[in-house]
Length: 364
Ligand code: F6R
Image (cartoon, rainbow, N blue to C red; front, top):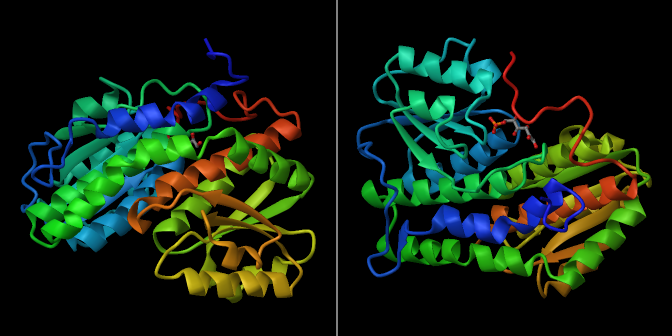
């Protein structure tokens, strides 16, 4: 049932091109440049958006926060569900509360949804599991259609959630008139390329390269992950994946935050994984990388294909296919998943049975 793979997690990593196709299919219309999500909410009826989720879904939500604010210019706040439900949030009929969940059963997220509804918010679920509890309580659901995810560590649900968020941001931006048609089309095309680009991220040469890097650093006791802008959540997700399945301590920061404290940790024993793919802020990220190297930290850089210029600042490079910056978190997440799973493999961990973790957390 693992289709020839050693683990469900590996199988699901390789299912991502398909999962993404299913997330996007029928929703992007190249001819008109429109996104059709079949949701009955009036995109002009709310003044703010609250995103609520846990764990990996929360990091997908962070990408969503960035995309929605950029493309649709609506104020977005984001909370982990366990905080939202107890913090007496400011909610009104003008609020759209978006809950994100692979299982649709996470109790913290479900209770947070009930809290938002109690104060009159409109609600939307970005959910994988058909007919799950959350889908029965939200006003509307944007299914991600990633297919069943069995591996405890979430992989394909993450990339599909981020893609669903991208479509939602496009839809909101176009409907609210904040996103020009030409830019909308450009992003729509970039989204459509995602399954192919993720497939290209999984070629044997790329896999061998990540395996080699994983073997080189698998004995490290701590890792730092850095990213900026729309890829700061990619760093958080990378650290979470590594912790969950390899039990190596990992922390993630927005790269510009490093100088405010975490830089004190850096020495020759600290591998630092940096998302440094093409972006408006790439130069700033590279100067963060130089700060790491000046303190003898080992740099594993995620770079855009062909960027040999910045490769000289890194000890090791994971190249990823070129994408539009706004969709790059999907492609970059795959590199993070591969690094984590190959480190865990190298350490002999059973990635499908990470200690202390369950697939759906239905207790508080
Ligand atoms: C991470 C992971 C967890 C879940 C979290 C939310 O790999 O699996 O962090 O993402 O428990 O689960 P869902 O999305 O089912 O609400």
